[in-house]
Image (cartoon, rainbow, N blue to C red; front, top):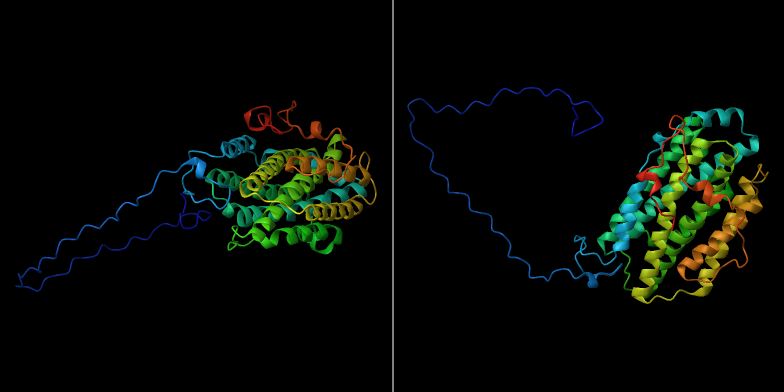
Length: 383
């Protein structure tokens, strides 16, 4: 039986206390205590005279309607994101990692281990940062509950992704302290984290006044960076080295978990970009093109340093040149989705196999891995 004070501890057997005895009246004293006045009924507050919620009055931010009233929807697409996200429900315990242990110990080269470990080192910190950003910087600023409900799911998914990386680290017996601290001691990994901190920390505050135009533009820039670059490019591109190993039959358990994560992140980026565009439309925000260009240049420089470190020695079927060209190609797609100019004109898809490799719609051996050809994994849209 659960102990509801501490559900992880077995419930302790309650000690029986002796029943309280009624006070004894002195012998011969038959006087009864004076009657007590009857309890007065609690006065109910008068009903507040307010009009029903009109969905047309809702706004993404700075709305004045009741944040606790979900429907009628003004943004039904946000509710669709929530429903779609729940079709991709999974945990890392669903995937068999036994072969990954053999691959890591006996098949990976030193260069491939270097790639694998440093991809994990970057992702472990990044998803914690993403979880905090959505929970503390973005979700509370939304004034339409259908947006907040999907973002609550997003916070859970970022925590789930962190569990996944931790599960990989534990399963392979890696030194946790060493892996987790790489983002602090490896400059090329730290650079990406520091750029994210600079771009996001200014909006990790509850007291931001988004009716102030400067604060509003700063918030939109921060959210654009988070959705378009941090999740839309860095995460999306960050899984590719592991998928390159998977293509050669290596680390397939890790890669399958990353397939589930990638589906989550595609939804996260798509949702964030749509919210940014809705805010820009509703609040008539105009972002400085020079500031946007600087953001892309910083992101490319950080990614280039990172690629030079994790792929200082190319692995079979994957190089730092592939990694960077794919980053620029994806960056152009995200910019167009945001309604901006392509930051890297002429960039080409360096990994034509990526979409197919990351797609879960394929036959799987039930005894090797999780069956995914059903509603949970198979009904998602990548758009």
